[in-house]
Image (tube, rainbow, N blue to C red):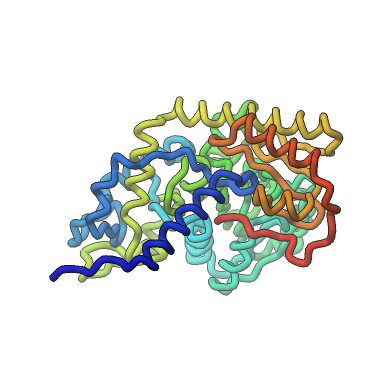
Length: 388
């Protein structure tokens, strides 16, 4: 049966969309998305209904899948995050929100009577996930730099020390790219003699380059994390939002349920899962490797240092957290915000120097700031949700 072609109006709509996306892609600095990817070598794989149904580490009955590549991606990040080589598991998710949901779900199943603790700088999706899981929680204060206030955390946990503890730490907060210290959190729990605890680290942005920071900041399995999530479309880059969840296999085994008709375990949030995303990540990691990821971080860091210096040179009070590729600045006019798509919360905005950002882009941004005469006004919708 022959499929009819699009009419001229529909083709025009597609052409307009392409032009709009191209324009928008070229002028954003406020969102953590890498756009310097080229997956054209994988175009042939779009003819297949790739569905990574079930657990990637189990042999299911559906064969149009990329589980082998998915397992390699998981193994890559498990090693990068210093997981026990004999006790790791994971899967490629639809993004950071799903990854965090799984980490919290796993923690809740292990400790159904636990209290969850997370800082006020935590990604907005965490509140939604806790509501979906129906888990009680307490918000911990943040320090001015966006990092968790450990004194408030310790005092709050002490008042509830009769309950198991689940901590949602963040390694790269939405607005300020602050990093919670997992080793310090683990130490506090140890000092309070709380044996039943679980730490999930939301490392959506900074986890992929965290191991290359100097000095290195504590966030991975050896530092005390029980599960870690990252985003694939952020630092690495992907045409489809994607994430990775790494956990301990021993914990996963305690909640796995077998499903006979798919010939696999029901261990993931969604049953049918995008099978192209693992292929993209596998391809990118094979091309980049550890040294390529490290080089991307060094480039981003250099651009962030340049951006901060240029903003300060024109009298703007800009700053960064140590090792951060995010430059924080006072909120801008609506014209600047709209052109450069700057995420804004309260009185601050930020520029995120992803690997695709160049000095030329920063120079154009600085020039726009210098030449903009539009006053800065209060915006009822000042907060732009970050990409999860």
